[in-house]
Length: 206
Image (cartoon, rainbow, N blue to C red):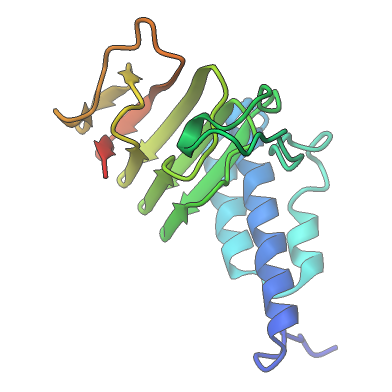
């Protein structure tokens, strides 16, 4: 039987495949971050996911993984009266949002975060987590970043403090000078941790 690929003229089919690919990458990243997959197996499956052109090929990568990874798709409660990132009136969903980037460029923008923890995996690529459009409730948001020969950039509003405790080996983990790092007494703040090997984690204000 001849192998079939999505029709490039069918934008709905391509969009659906890309959404499924993103979902599969999030499941794989969650499994890696919880020791369900080792590094070699994660890299193998991530490569297959990037190359897949059929839904069945993507589904096959998840068959032996337990359960459904929490990715924070449930909407958080909102309050329209307060501006900026302090509008949320209820805690974000518990659990972790997984973001994977393998040999590519991935940007998370807008109100993309509905959980109180983010696990990111960046392999030879660039991941940007933009928190300027995110509505944060009181308390900490935890970002754990694993970076291998790539970069993860966290963009925060000027008045949102950050605590940086990521570890870098043959790389760097830095918060720029204009980023507030005084979380004492803060209503909301971000905690950035993780591990960098031959890459970088950078927090900056825009």
